Amino acid sequence: MSSNTGDNVAAGVAAAAPARSFRTVALIVAAALLMEQIDVTVLATALPTMARDFGVSAVNMSVAMTSYLLSLAIFIPASGKIADRFGARNVFCTAIVLFTLGSVLCGQSSRLDFLVFARLIQGLGGALMVPVGRLVILRTVSKAELVSAMSWVLVPGLIGPVIGPPLGGFIVTYFSWPWIFYINVPLGIVGVALAMRFVPDIRETSSSRFDFAGLLLTGTALSCLIFGCQFASHGAASLTVTLVLFAVGIVAGTLYLFYALRAPEPILDLALLRIPTFRLAVIGGSLWRIAGGSLPFLMPLMMQLGFGKSAAASGVITFVSSAGSMVMKASAPRVLRRFGFRNTMIWNAVIATGLLASCAAFRPSWPLWAIYGVLLITGFFQSLQFTAYNTIAFAEIPPNRSSAAMSFYSTFQQLMLSVGICAAATALNVSISIAGRAHAGLGDFSVALLAVTAISIFAAPLSARFGPRAGEEMSGHRGRR
Image (cartoon, rainbow, N blue to C red; front, side, top):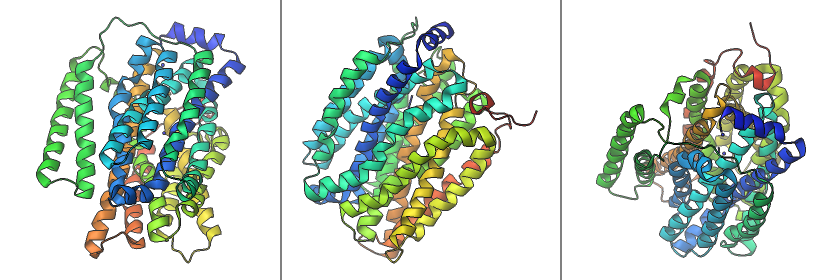
């Protein structure tokens, strides 16, 4: 789904913020997440219709989703430092404006390349909007209340995935696809007005310069690697171009590793990986998000291309997993308090992976109630894993490093969502090629689902490396002494 001042500032803000003020700010942040999530899930449902208008294949339309996630991955590293320098409220409002402007441009697109450009602008807004909003929550809530706070923020935001697919299907079926972007305009206007009134202008003064060199290196590395994966998954460019992108990305990433070891305050602080809970949450969460990023891309295509359903019918079916996610948010604090982070993440990863793999068996002959049931339960367990990773990552992070930690974590979160889409598209295209078909069939979607599931299962053994008492201050669970 992503986003911290010094000890005294954070403590002062937290002490000054009454419960009512916290809930108000949490709902504003949740509204920003709502707008972003509606956009992503509505677009996934509309991809086949847009592909016909643009004259490209539906599978190749994944670049519209990847380009947005790419922009997030490039600019999220700077979100914490920008918020510290210019103030959380100013950056948050500017981000909403950029996201809304990008939405308008998306609605005006008549070619795929212009849509990609507009999605990059949207991504710039999203890179600052949600992480900075979460940053405000992280700085104003104690660790003991962080699980409940994050759940409070995410529950309204999950309305987006719930209503996005059916809303997108309804708009595409009965109106025209540009309106899936125009619905962000009133949300953006209301969001800016409320943020200017209620969001605290939290910032941290720093004498260090902004790390432009680090941003250039990380941006080059991430963009080349993600577009290299995109081109490799679709064969959209020559082998030479694809290999050059990978080579440039690897070189830029390697240069950043050496640079970050010497820079006083690098844009992505690799020293954070020395903190065990943060390191394991980044690695395990990255593996888990490969499947999480692929499901919103694969399921609408599977329902429309494999089952032959309309966009509206596809949306009604695929929204169910998001409904399961929403149900889970109210249960997460109780589950973590009862079992602790370690046990929850180990066994939940196994259960959720098995449920995701079962989606590969979906066929038109299945009764709808069975498909609904599997997707509902899958969404529940997937969302529990996301909540656990998103919270325990900050269990041992000191307040004065929370900005850097949120930027680092959010960057990898969005990067792996992009990798998930590329991995799914690659598996889909490979299966189509091996079968000698011109278009994707049901079996190809099954192969893609099983491929991403096989990667995400490795999150379970990694979770076993957390200590029994990891995150107990957040969960309230008392593990072995």
